[in-house]
Picture 1 (cartoon, rainbow, N blue to C red):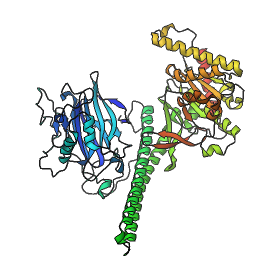
Picture 2 (cartoon, one colour):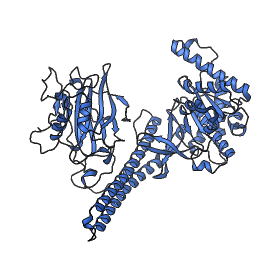
Picture 3 (cartoon, rainbow, N blue to C red):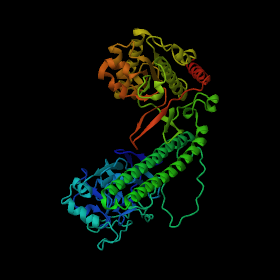
Picture 4 (cartoon, helix red, strand yellow):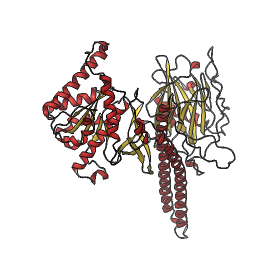
Length: 622
């Protein structure tokens, strides 16, 4: 399975012979530098570029193009080389990456299977960028998504790597990037014989690189724009072929050892596809708007054309080009969204219990699992481009942090339509539904739920948990709250000491081995300073030993504590009882709208599931 990297993320490399694929949508120069442990390059002879395309273990392609293939053989690198930096630089009239489609780079093995990929989003005025870094640490090689751009261009990039006279060196390299350069030798990516560096004793040949596909005309060239995402892009055919029907979606059509794992990977593949196609559409619209503004400004500066009406014609032509770009981008978006919607219609009914909505018939055949799944569904996600296309929000198990169901109004329009009492009741209903899902996802006795409700205001919403026996009656009053928090705090202390000391077998024999979830209702009412301190401790230290919080609270209610509780809120995953677009996606900059997992009106499935969970738990204890 391909690892989709974000900026700064790394991934191990299982192969030493690699092919690095670059799809930029616009002609770029592709090269590589060989550096030491600090990333410093010893000299110009350790830069692979179109004028010197082969170094020991590295072969780069020829002149600037929209697509490149770089061959790398890590075993053939000199021993002093600890880093291989893959760089991209704009040539010719292109001034900055921010005006072009985001470049896409992928690392593949010798058989063509992708190992990791990275989309270089967030670039603006930069004209050169370090896209990837292959680095050696403790004898093993990894790849890191860099995305380090330089407004000063290739000269600033080379200077940052410790090279002398970087401006002259950059100019010489860029001069070899055009096909017309007379001194630019033909690149042979399959060769690792250096042109300026003595050949080492044993230089294995790098993996042969596939010939680069036909360049795709970029945005800045004035030609047609390719709106397809690089992940889905293949080499365009020289002649157009009749349009083929889109592939028929199949549930479980993803990599994985089991059907649950394949469905999990497919769901997040749909999430990534939706994020990318929406980002491509928004980027195209932004480019169309910026180009329209620029062209309109240019018509205003040409005062000689005002008299004969040429300005009016130029403005009309500019608007027509803008409308054409937006229309074509929308056509591609609608096509991709329709394909994703068709896939969703196939995948949704096939999801297992842990991934399914509450209205899925699979819940009626629920049985307590023998082992926990990879993840649980905590809601749905969608984007404004198509609000009816919902992507399941799957959260991996065990939970890495606690949950917080926000009972405040925040900035949600839906929350503003409810009164305070109704919003708080709905928030607790959502918390109970989340707790039920976590209970249903674990084997019998593998998950224990505690509840604190100081004022007893949540008795009605908590009834399904308590009446079925899935959870003990909630602790009430200051004494009850203090007792539960003290019990869980001691548990975290014991487990941490046992793990750090390697004495897990020394734990008390009566200690519940199940993971623990504490539902905290109506915070901070009824909580003193000592209880607040323990809650912060559980939020920070509990997840590492299987103790989790599920807070039901409004952040504004805790304003009296000032900034004291800010770390508490930040450590929890915020969920809402009503639709809200509060989930930020740093990968492509989207604000995803979250839909809570509400039960169908009048449904009894929650009680049926909790009854089975409680029966299995008590049966195991007997």
